[in-house]
Amino acid sequence: MAATADVMDKIVALCKRRGFIFQSSEVYGGIGGFWDYGPLGVELKRNVKDAWWADMVRNAPLGPDNIEFQMVGVDCSIIMNPKVWEASGHVGGFSDPMQTCRQCKRHLRADQIADAVQKSEWHEELKRIWHEATPPNLDKLKSWARKRGSKLAPGLALVREPGVVIDALARALARAADPRQSAFDAVSNVLFSVTGRQSASDICPHCGGELTEPREFNLMFETFVGAMQDSSSKAYLRPETAQGIFANFKNVLDSTRVKLPLGIAQIGKAFRNEINPRNYTFRSREFEQYEIEFFCHPSEADMWYEFWRDVRHRWYVELGLRSDKLRLREHEPDELAHYARTCADVEYDFPFGLSELEGIANRTDFDLKAHISRSGKDLSYFDDQRKERFVPYVIEPSGGVDRSVLAFITEAYTVDENRASPELMKFHPRLAPTKAAVFPLVAKDGLPEIAEPIYRDIKKSYPCQYDAKQSIGRRYARMDEAGTPFCFTIDGQTKEDGTVTVRDRDDASQIRIDKSRCLEYLRDRLPI
RNA sequence: GCGGGUGUAGCUCAAUGGCUAGAGCAUCAGCCUUCCAAGCUGAAUGUUAGGGGUUCGAGUCCCCUCACCCGCUCCA
Image 1 (cartoon, rainbow, N blue to C red):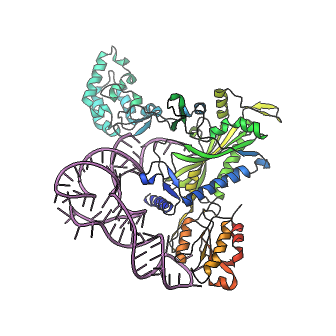
Image 2: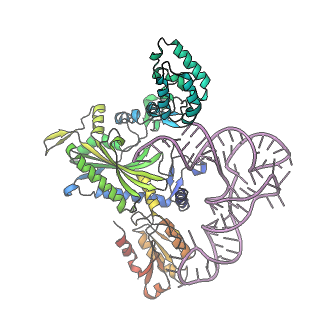
Image 3: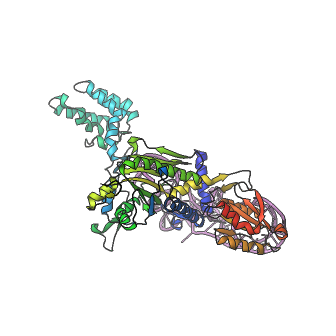
């Protein structure tokens, strides 16, 4: 674990040193959960998004049995009518009331507490002792508190202040007409706290300690539309781009002559007020998503789900996530969100653990039906072939752009102690921020005069750097850290036979090609 | 939000409560250099996170604030 943490630290350091990723507002000490992309990072991220848009939208793959289907894009506003988020369930359901244990300081979801208490070992034992005798044996309870209790539930009132609690229990039993009616659940609150006011839902399942009041954690950022800040002007920054697509489903149908099956794609920012952003850019409060909502007939939903799951997994592999760190994992039925019938995650094993890059879900007709019901608009679809009107099912491949970028960075990061410059970034050439560099071996003897036109020629087609300063080794090393796949070097031999060397980033090998063929060399190795 | 840790140059780190806060690496300039962070010379770089206090004197001790990191929680 120490070693893997070190790897992440090295990656973070390289990303800062070379200008991939900076902490947002760093001059003011930073701000948690927000990150900036530097000159190399913005090129890398743009390449990732461009590759997605090119491969998924403009040149979408053929469907099962080579079905050609339609794929279009949208770019929706970040702030939408708040009713969108009421319909989608985000206002009500996208928040988790949390409670904190005053004793052990654990943070717990309020809706899971009562259940967890019932299942806890200390609760089982208390219950058993209580029911063993009639009336309950208080001495036995007292000795349990001293021994087992102090281990299992050190935060429990009965354990912390046995005298006070046992007295309170004795009084409660004396008051009861029939001790047998003093069912465990009815008086158990006395066991839990000296005030007797706590119930099983206010007790820490781990240590028996008292919890704070439930606190609302709505993960949506709030803002106000217009200058007046009151409840009527409250709005939200979108927590996902998907709802913009659902809200525009009818607009797209009515304006573009598309037919089902139909995919609508969007890349854009989304915002979630995470309780605790962690793991570098992985869990950010402001992040970018690429999402497809793929609308189809309900009877074909399973087929399209499998299709998209495999297409999306393959896309990551083809862009360089070749190691066994990339995994495709089907969700277990009990893991599924309320809106999803089936779901698979594309996961990457980062140094900080296996984490999700993208989820592919069968969302059924949940979202469209929610918007039909809330807005009163008819969002159903009439299929001319089938002569049938229906609410489409939706397959949703929803990926995190920044998470993918971090995975590509992590996979590309390579340490080779046999090289003079051990650290390098082996980006897929399609993703590499800079595609090539041009160096005169020395900054004299007419070499710069040969190199500069080559650089200017390449620059018209590909991001390219020119560098004549310092030793050649240092220049190669800098390009290795930037992940530049190819370096062209002009040397003395260039003046004699017109050839330059091409140096390969991954193995530092060199070949000579004619100086007129540099651009052609790149075109053969870079798509588009 | 709670607990723990950290905060000195771009990076890694020094500096017993005591002189003008130093060193290596990196950066930049010049020289040299015909293929892998080479060599020589030189330069630039700090509100010691911010604020307050104790003291003759604070990077160092105390308090507050801020930020980041690690747990609890999270899923694009």
